[in-house]
Image 1: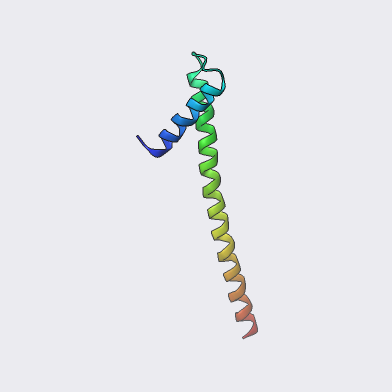
Image 2: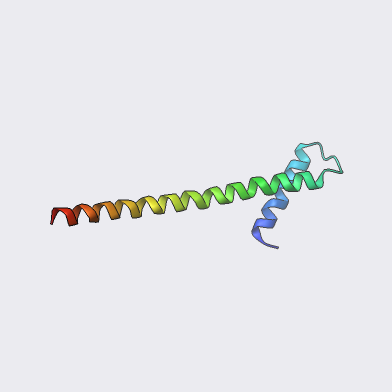
Length: 70
């Protein structure tokens, strides 16, 4: 089982327990947990990607300034 699936499983269980452990709502809990976990995972990827692209823009701007000055 993947770490992602395990995280979804654990979150779905938490949602089930928080909801009073009612049976018959497994799919709803699973989908809500999946949505939360994937949003968190993708948000982390986007933050890393944005941070990396900001660094490369700064380097590019600095190199352009050097070329203009020369």
